[in-house]
Length: 375
Image 1 (tube, rainbow, N blue to C red):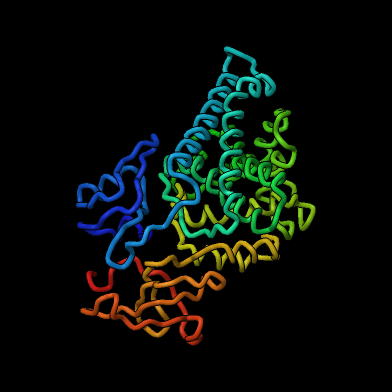
Image 2: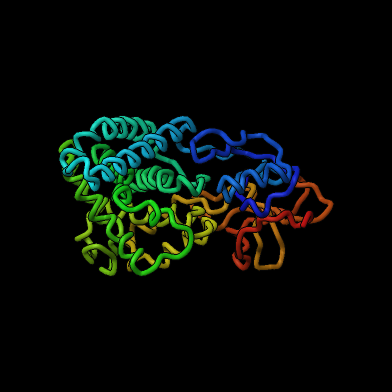
């Protein structure tokens, strides 16, 4: 299967992965063949990218966690955010002078639920320490924040495992990443979910979320202190140009340095209220280009090794003017896969095979989303 923008999907295309609506229920099931009416329905539900199966990409890409676990966790994050928002509204009303400690006490059951889910996911994922990142999660724009929180946690855990963190460190890393944007629950939803560019005043409001999240989490005595720090520091940059404190280098907690990379990658490869998703290879190029400035250099380099930017079945444009389909990923050099050069009227089995590890003069220029013989 391969990920394509909904605008590039044509009638007769089969869905390769369930599509969810903003309530977390299945909008269209895997295997459904799309027509114009269904494509319009997907667009109206604010899903801008979908996984498809076609003659080039009938191989399934497996998620690193079970779909039901992913969905259950996203809904639990949503429930947590929404209850914080409700508590916050009550605090600002004349009905009740609600302080932070009272809010925390009222939220204990939601946090305990998320901690239990986090432990389950960490245990499941640490049983397989050779996980590669070859799937971009399809997000509904209306629930982006909750899906992004889980994805950032999963990506952080994969990087933490690759960095050989101790098992005892992996849970607080994961949970800190899961809660990294909790401060956004204290901001007006009209700002958090705004479509289009922020005004200067709105941007200043958004930049408050790390401090707000930390102030809230620090009242939870059952949460590891390193997890709390992630909420505060995930927008700090290695060269000191980040916020809210302008911290730099190793003064930024290592968990926060890990989460900042995962946060950036998932945001860049997602359709958000303010941006269209970039392909994984462009996101990785940005992260590597920012290694040593925005990101810890060694961590960024390690993360890049774990991402498969061109999964098998991806259509790519090559520097020699041809279009090819990725046939085999080279695990140690995922930017240089083996490809088959597409030719009209020739079956996939008979196409010319080129291993980009050997043909070093040929490079991949980018991903092609349209079938070159049907456009």
